[in-house]
Image (cartoon, rainbow over all chains, first blue to last red; front, side):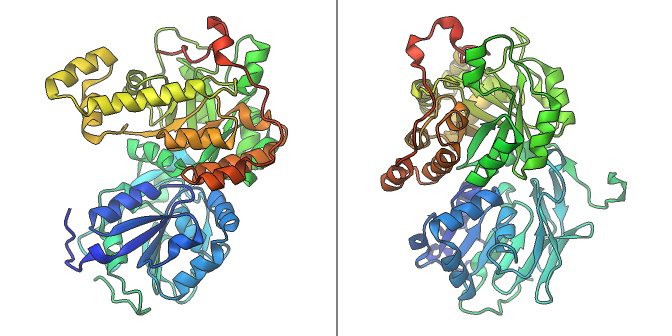
Length: 201
Length: 301
């Protein structure tokens, strides 16, 4: 499947944290855009990445894994150096103040309820061309107490479910489970060397 | 309570049911019988817990009819952890499943480990909002369960033995039958569907995709980190560990080690490290020495 952006994603390597969770669906999406996907389990896997995805899964498992593998500092250095990062669901939680401390938000885990309250919905995202995004929410968190530098891109009712802060993009839902590659394209279009990334819209 | 919401939500779609299993991938789902065990499992890195009254090894030892757990126990476990909580219903016992749905468990396991309630019919899983995981010994059985609405499949193995041989047999069979379908033409696929006693549309889909349409975990007999890495290398996307953890000498350490080996299943050095100094595994039974009536995997069809 060809990318619509024509930016030559083929030269880009996207790391996907693969300690546990939905990393394969992200890898498939990244490859469908013509970029390369690399599973990240140890710090050495972070070498030479153009972008990083922290997938959904269980945040408790990922927290333990990051600690066990000594990944916290290398991940922080990578993101602070400006590498574009996309966190989805548990990946958003991992970026927050209480976990990696990169994204200036708190998150409320399982905020919409247990699995029986999981849902699909169309969500409007600021700056994303092409209409609302079909979003799959699974035991999803939402953002609480966003800091001043955090841009809210989308909400479900009053609750922020998509945010951006510089090179960090975080969503409560699972773009990799819907056939909509726009957030992955946005990640690949973000310029890692420039923190003030051009908005897609 | 949804009246105040403006966003139109579709709940209980197959995408959200199968999607939760997608988020459990690469993880270890652990059997627990108390809230304390659930907490130990969560702290050791379990991706989910399976709440049940007795682990399979004890069901096997005690005999008698094995049923759904006491709701008080399931609620206690739901309050103790934040990870998904699964619970087992008897094969065909749709009222046990209704009770588990009313308790809002995150996944229902229609399980051969409990005593079957219906010798002809499995639960109509499409009728539920909570997703189901079901066991299978071969591809036809897996596809019949998916046809009935299962959103996740686990190969059955032989629960409560600590013997990996049946898990390997079932997983290899499912995977080789998938590979075989991918070599057949349309006419042959219709015949294959008949032989597998499986819905033709699912047989066609598998032939095209070369994989199940839902996540495939492995269960039944996993006792060591190397067992977990073995089934992951054979194509499992995650593992269920039943008696293997809390019937071992050092459950907390064994749980952590199985989690580590499941993540690093392709790295023998890491599996070696995870296998080191774990103490005694569970008391195990050689499956080939069991009598036919002692086997759990043939339950269901």
